[in-house]
Image 1 (tube, one colour):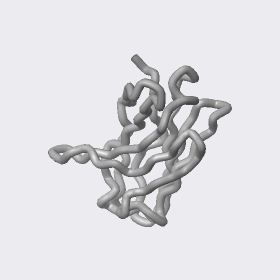
Image 2: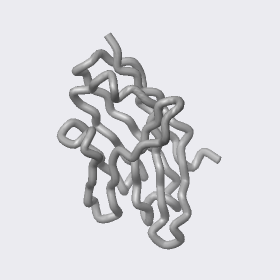
Image 3: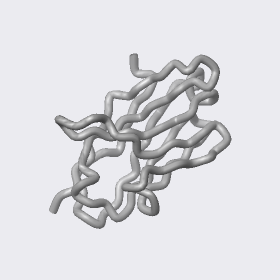
Length: 117
């Protein structure tokens, strides 16, 4: 229903950078733990990073030190700054919101990131 909308994906060379954005409805965002996931066709969806309502951040080992998750509460947006990209980062990246009140989850439609020379 368009409550989470990702943008910013694309084609980038190895070693390059991209910034993904997730726009959320205000009714969801302010009380939600926000996460990024990614999925390669044929594989399970993989957790990438989390940011809590208070700004605490957590990363999977595969992206720690290269990716930075952030949130802009005033504008109901979440970001994923991706640096030093590798071909194995190629995937569809999904934005996820989980209400801290109801535990209801919301998903975006995904944005494709392709890392290739």
